[in-house]
Length: 487
Image 1 (cartoon, one colour):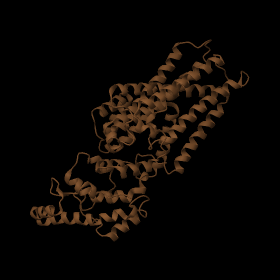
Image 2 (cartoon, one colour):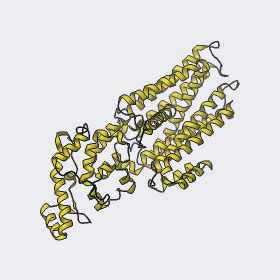
Image 3 (tube, one colour):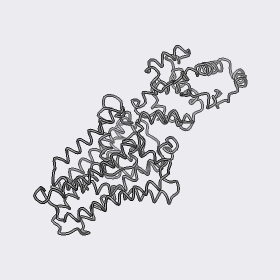
Image 4 (cartoon, one colour):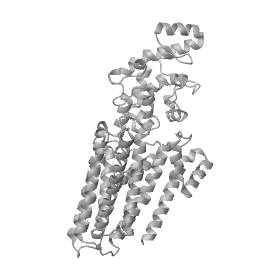
């Protein structure tokens, strides 16, 4: 039976990875899809993804996500379809194997190695995301927990491996023991726990996942992603999943505490059932099992406290922050001090997660897009431009020719905001966006005048207005003036 389950587990893992690869690359063409599938079948897909991340490859044209997320997604699928089921199967088989005493036998060593390997992969995902230079640059309000020095990073990484491995061992041990006493209760608990998680996500307007796939599939995709993330945290305590795009800091902490409580309850139910109340008993005494659970839980608790002390103090609040994904995006957009950071907060993220600030983002984009195209900053990549909703790109820009003109009067801007949802929640408080109308008209007029009358008059206008010139002759508005303020 265990051999059949293991084979089924491997088949499921391969199929999930193939499905993800097709979904990721179907817009890149058949050759790209078949090439990626070949990497999976010969077992080098993780290595290929790691190479792309290490070499700094950008998101390919037509790809759904960037190489870093693709690498993490591949590992997560392996964890949820191979590592976690494999450790559960090994733990249950070991407990019922007929051994007369707990010893460092080959089966026990295999379980420990499996847990350590899973802990390593889980910790590596957290480490890669937290230390990624782009993440620390664009989303410094969350990424940056791990110390900057090599020694500090090594210590935190090792502690996370032990912490995640202990979480997996504890969960597998408690589930195996509870399954011997009340198998139905295991499934009832999992269904209730998952149901409460999904319901609170929906109640808080935080159900949709951040990847924008469009269409009705976004509902099914978001549900699957939410379930996968929840299971990963339940069994591995992956620190990255406290991100507002995933579980969120507060729910992550609550979930970890409840998981440990459920673990202890499951073990207590097994110990209290006695020999008569057990469908199948272990080969080890109750005292040995009790001490083992206490040792694993204690190790997890100690490593967690050490991680809190070793990481940067300013990021500890991310472990109990109640911020949802829409709130996180809005806060990041409003607090950003550069166009680059603002753009990376919203573009490429599911639009359903930032509908509350959509009107503000639209006008901010239309105010600045022509300037971006003139200046051609490094961060304005083809992938980022492709992720900007078409209605936010000015029709008069060099990127899109013809079509309607940008709003030029207060009434037109007013109508735009109403169509976007009466100001979009926190958007444009105190009418601050309308204060930029004159700036917009002046910028538009200057560009039009330059095109008609040439550089001489453009230079006169520049000197009289006090603005700086871009490399293509356009005016660069001061940072404090060119972006709509909020409240």
